[in-house]
Image (tube, rainbow, N blue to C red; front, side):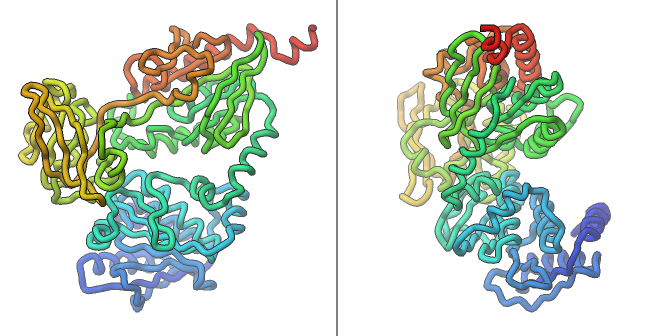
Length: 529
């Protein structure tokens, strides 16, 4: 099950255990249970601090508990075999149970320990989901540092009947005390923010105490990380405030056109960006949604960004890198059946539709790539494109057309996503040539129709926006407001690509540097007055 390289890595990690741990399995007679037994026997054979027993009586089979030998009340349960994207989660669970300290700030651990009440989490993941590990690891950490928190982490592919009965059609899916509580990618700070009613006020108080920055970057994707690193290297006090560090890259799976790196994955690149930012004296602030920009009142004054928690930050210069998000169809049924058959991530949610008929809406590169990926997992794929022809690269079109379980419908306007009240059951579209309405019976709909810039919050700021809502910039990444620059997918720069966003972020930083050295700081202006 584990190759020699994985065993060697695991053995090294288990050498970091500070105290004994126990693995207690509940197994059946099925193949997955046999795999679980093999995995646990391998783990226990690599360290004398790990013991494995197979006399558990949990109803979910196969499943196993990881717990501290010194305190059986501190545990986390994996149901299924946590390999694939979840192998790292398994390793971290073993380490944390064994007393190895997590790489988490002390105030986060204190917040976990101080949670009041009992929280019994169940979370569903798929082994191909690149958004799931953050949630798995967050709940594991919480269970290991607060005995009143329990976490059962369930591999959906191993418990299909349970997934069906609970109506889980998108992962990650989190249940709290038996009720659906949250879906989508979340890290520990986001989960704590939902549980701790005072978290927002504490965060706002912390921000209010910060001095003005020379440069504040708003947005934490490739453009934002690049901009922050460049301005910090120039010696300017730099802050980066992001709703989600990594940005939309977190939702990207295979990346094959990042020059000099033949292949990587979005979450890996996002983690590398965050790590690179951490190498510099940059104040990185996560989980902050910008709501308002107040421009400097006079030349040389401070610009101010107001966030959704009521706090604000000031800076001499701003670099706006808020990126873009997936575009919604805007048809009846889309919002109603989101996570109930309407999906946006084929890698995350595709395995939940194994053997079923799904549709992909969108004939660009993203849509065709999604259809190709899904065709290898589901029973049948219908790709629907508004235009008379697909817009994807020819090599992708050729690959798609070679697949036997794919239908392609062009000149089709999707008018409604239908369902039975609990889940999607079909899609209605209008043939744009004949005007005839047609219906396709489906179990799921994956929407891949492009991007919308995250710029709504700028509409009353004085920043010039294009008719598409993009921030208008010049060749130096400058906006129409002095001292305010922008980069990446939120701007009018053509071609929304990771590598272009990084270059634009660097350009915006260099332009901010040029602006700052040519303009006096507010304090200097006040002293000269």
